[in-house]
Length: 389
Image (cartoon, rainbow, N blue to C red; front, side, top):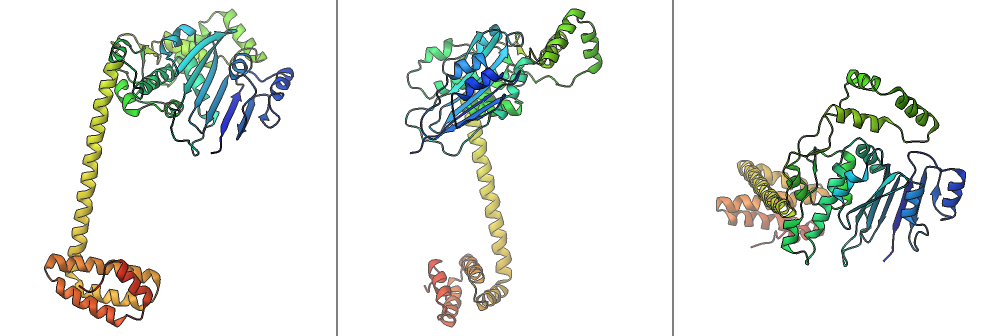
């Protein structure tokens, strides 16, 4: 069984310096490395670096996954854009941890496969699918954090040692708006963390609609004009020198908050227990199963009606069908032989419905006698059960 591990790091807010680049290059001779990117794949052995330290010191995003099911996504943002107090309520063991280092908040999303699970040789990811989550979080959209907390609840349901009172005593964190309308990167994160879609549907019932992301340029212009001149000068200087993250996401988040249009959590909604969300998810799952069964039943009925209509048309033109069979056999080709066999099977059903199976048996016998020298055709007749009764 071949191992596979994938490591990817990305520097977003600033590129690595020459000394930092040398430091990273010393970790691997086979990795694809640039001032903003590090990618390596392992079919044996392990990465020699410390992912946590690399994120604390150099990079803004990191992706790891292995074919035995383990997955990890790390994001780093300045605490001025996302303070730790905003993220901590969503942290859950084995799903999301966070900590601060050197003015940055680090978020560690993780998923570990259960022992004995099947290895996955098909699934792959790239960090590009997730880097936009940094921008969303910086703009005050906390849906990625709630998804991580919810994925922990998904995993609880797979464990046997979780007591019922633990579900009852665990209260959900603040519910962000827009859980029913995830962005592309957020849906990718939900899939990455193996989030139960029924659990997400149930949780989203307490989430208000996502606010419009349209920007009122006039209102934004007026708000920026009102900022202190010293603050605007500092923002422009940092942007020009590349010594701080681009100010756009932070400014938009502040503007939306000031306009009361942030996508942040609702404080008015009553927060539910994990048990309530789990029970609601059970109802969603049952309803989904019922709808699927109804859809399958409707499909079966539609197929049956189509089949009956086909046989009705064939019964009305039975003689033409026998002539078509003779024509198909006369072509002496595999495809026409198969079509002739299909048509014969339909005719057998037509005669059974009409109560004339003896008539079909007689004509089939004549057909077999007429073409008994065609071994390929006879073999098809036998495999299809088209033998003399």
